[in-house]
Image (cartoon, rainbow, N blue to C red; front, top):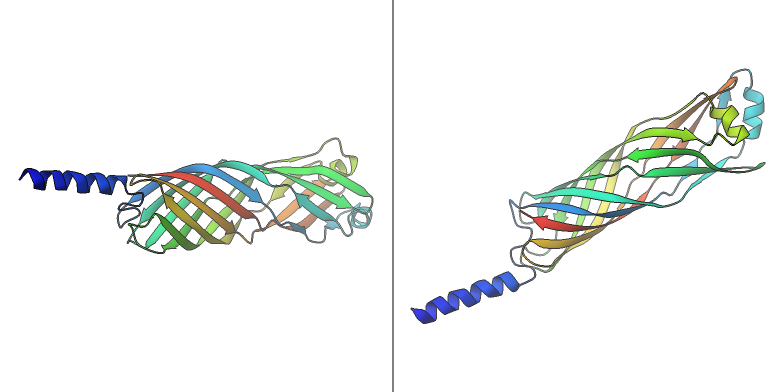
Length: 233
C-alpha cells in the first residue's frame, strides 16, 4: 500500500512538472495578456475633390501616397477549446494611434492625419498535435470589424488645414483575419502564445475643408505580430 501511494504521488508530480500536461484540451478557457505590434502595409487611392475649390485640390493631391509606421499596443484575448483541436479566440487591444504621413509631389506632410484604430476579432483555430505536447502550432481564420475614433489632422500644415479643416472621417469596415502561430506550454496553467495575422483592411476617408469635399480609399492591410502570456482556467 505504501509503495502504491508513493507511486501515485510520483506520477502526480511528474504530470504537474511536465510542461505540456493536459494543455489546451476540450473545455479549457485561456485568458491572454501581451503585446501586439501592428505593421500596416498601406496604400492610398486617388484623392477626388468636389466643390468650388476642387480643381486646385485635385491638382495638388494628384499622385498622393501615404505611409504609416508600425505601432505597439496591449493585446487581450480569450481562447476557448471546443475540442482538443478546435478553438475560438476573441481578441481585443488597446486602440493604437496610427499616424498617417502623406507624400505629394510638392513635398511631404508628416502626421497629416492621426487616428485610433479599434479592431476586435473573432478567430477560429485548429491546433495541431495533442493536449499533452509542449508546443502546439495552429492555423486560424476569422473576421474583424474595424472602426476609427478620435481622428485628428495636423493643424500646422496649411494644405492639410484647407483640405480637411472642417472634418475628417474614416468608414468602419469588416475584414477577414488570416492567422498562424504556436503555443508553448510552460506548465499545465501557463503558456506563451505567439502569432502573426494578416488583415486585408480598407477604409474610405472623407475630408471636408475650405470650399471642397475630398474622398479617397485607404488600404491599411496590417500584419500583426502578437505575443501573449496565457493562463488556463
